[in-house]
Length: 431
Image 1 (tube, one colour):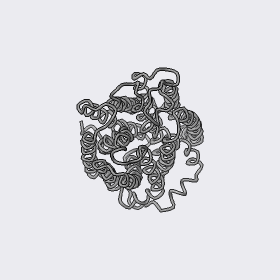
Image 2 (cartoon, helix red, strand yellow):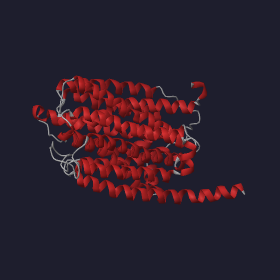
Image 3 (cartoon, helix red, strand yellow):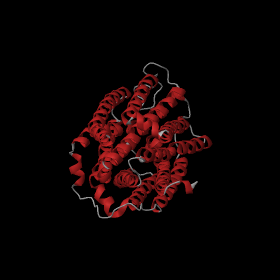
Image 4 (cartoon, one colour):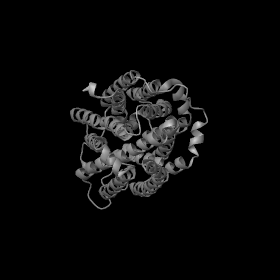
């Protein structure tokens, strides 16, 4: 099998596996972080919303660090930047073994910096291993592998919660088991990324200058894509933090809401993997459809999910445990899990097409392009996680609907501006 694959494809697969391991740990803990802190807030004298504040710090530091990530990655190379970034994740995970609010906030800042060089390194390494012909396929393949962590993590959480005799609280002993495993897996991810091979086609004399990220930031294409990047940050904060908290805090969904969090992780992962595999396997057909068609699909799927979530969950579900009914319906587990799958599928639609767009359009400045993508994404995630402790579900839905429509329009315009001249030029060359 390996003999049939090019070295660049093998590199992308190994990259995806490294991210699978890292985000098996981080995404899994993200689904339960607020619930873990809420369960232990009394005994540890912690703010019950410390999880939201932690995520706000992560994305605030992540946002700022993205502006210096490109030259950092250029000096260390993508491989070593990603390894160091993953080690920062391990520092954060280990803190939950002995939960302390001050350490939580400090390690949140550390992981924010690590995330910046990790994601910029990933985008750069993906671009180094891709061509115009393989960028869509490689982006989808990487996404399917990385987001498989949601399914693996969900199964792990489900087994732990089913065998630990917990209901809607999470005991300290369970937390120690979970975060001990998460830390070990994160360290294994660091080793996997450290063993990546450097692509033969990489040129070492193209070093990113400190101001190159800012120069790219003010170009017409990037200003237009800013709304697209921002929306992915808002919806990411929703499906990774707010929505799992809604499930955990809605008592009408069942007594063991921790197991429900695990099932939601599995459902979201299935949606992510399904989209990644579809776009990877049907690469030729999806190219004919165009990136804007896939983004339109992702937007439609998300709008349907937002409507169902509004109907199915109480307005106060993101803020406190509640026995209330949903906006229209009585909370239903099947609908909740379907919504998780739809959120995952739509998220994959958006992100795979953004990855492919950046690899194609900004291949010569991939570090800066991916750093800016994560800058806007992280900035809006930071803001969203902060207001998550203040806003009812209804306002979350309104924000998501408006920003998704604006982002889709901006993406369509960006595609037209960028590729219409290219198509004309290609036509003239053929003549």
